[in-house]
Image (tube, rainbow, N blue to C red; front, side, top):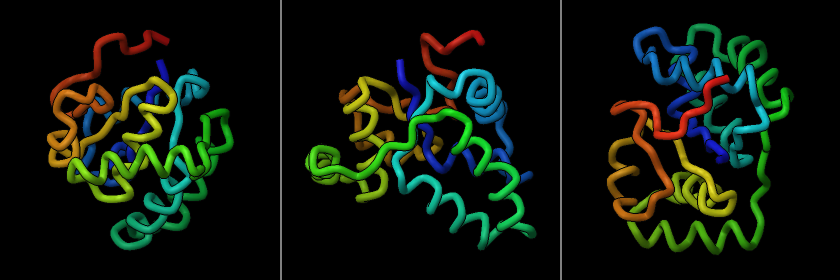
Length: 144
């Protein structure tokens, strides 16, 4: 299983008021077994953008916290014609173009998109490509 990490998960690693034990568990597993995880190329831009706006040391948090994860063995998936085509189908279900790329990557890798975005997750009812982390860790979560 490939676990696709949403920016909403990563931001909880750095924003004290947003901390969540399930986000912390994702981070623990990413550090232990990065090969189990993937992100679309837009992930780093989204996380940097939000950290720059709301974290007192956004750039430093990104460089010290996110860059090592991105360089640690996680699959960084590029935007391709195939991914864009898959994403378009998810846009038709009500997702933003950004969120549709996460869902499309989950479908592409036969994985599961981990998110804290309840609205986006609700758009995907029945698709089996997303998991809302506010509820619990997903079934089959790795014990690394």
